[in-house]
Image (cartoon, rainbow, N blue to C red; front, top):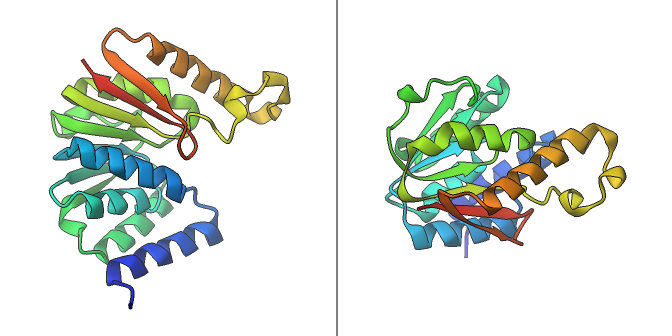
Length: 201
């Protein structure tokens, strides 16, 4: 059975990511994320960290009614994401914003999202969460990828490469904070590279 144009596009994107060392979600992780999103069925989703647009397009394909705003600060990756999205059948439902998510004025965004997917600078998750959780509708869900960082988060800190220790400490602190957050029910799922799922009470 011949592959569809969408499947061919995703294959091209995976090849580009591998060749140019662009981190995109592992297949198991994105498969689990898509299942969770299909159960939730959000209509408006905000993604922090577009990279080349792979996860945004996978989400748009899996959820035909969703509209996605996705933010990318790297100008080269932003341009590549635009190119890939314009080749897709989902381009009218995915808006890419070229900005640093920590500096963007949130008044420029939709005032309410059903879901937020955080997959940007790993050491800044707490700052992303604090800035954007006000845009999440009650009962909405924030999904945070890379909560294991290839197992490093659960290693003794002296075994973690020195240049990554600050990031790992920040992820640990964020996980601990979310474990007892009064406004969210959170669950850390051992899928992909660790997916934290936080539902707003």
